[in-house]
Figure 1 (tube, rainbow, N blue to C red):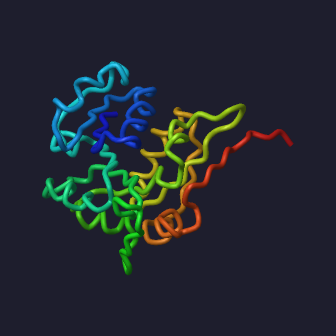
Figure 2 (figure 1 turned 180 degrees about the vertical axis):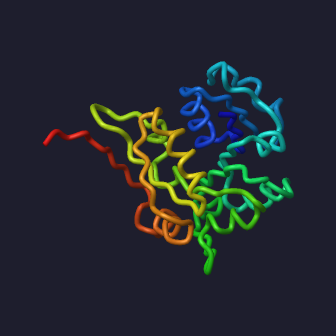
Amino acid sequence: MKIGIVGSGTVGTILAQTFSRGDNQILLSHASGVASLLNRRAEFAENVSFDEVTAALQQPLVIVAVPFEVAPAVMHQVADYQQRIVVDVTNQFTADFQKIDTRPLTGSEVIAAAAPNARVIKAFNTLPHELMTGKVDGPGRRVLFYAGDNREAKKIFAALVKPLNFRPVNLGKLRHGGSVMQVGGGLGHTAFVQLDEKY
């Protein structure tokens, strides 16, 4: 799959490296442009290329890995997402880690409102960034919670992450699933591994 990643900080970098292990083409972008990424070429596999934010936003699957404060403005660069899948990995913090109150909406519903006609999925934000690779020490698969309002988009997402050693767990729609995954929702900064037990 062609995947556009908006944001090349810690989370964007890890997810670019994670998804590059699959049969995907990754477009990694940064607000400062392609030139700001060129000296980082050695950090990524050959199936990761650099492009502008606007190009990343046009891919069939878009990963939003920018600070929550700027995410809506970034998403507004596209007028119609034409049913593309948008994966929201943000958490509602300010730059100095103060919680942002989005009530009555969940954080992902704010992102969805800024991305007209997108199929938004909330995922990855509950994991510490170092565990977003899907790798585990020992047997088992990394549990990955996700939520979204579009059933077909969630099926595509689950199929995409399974080969990367994730065990996707569907928490329902953005309203409920997103609320338990976001800051203060109970699942933040958790880490679970599923073992295939023999009974």
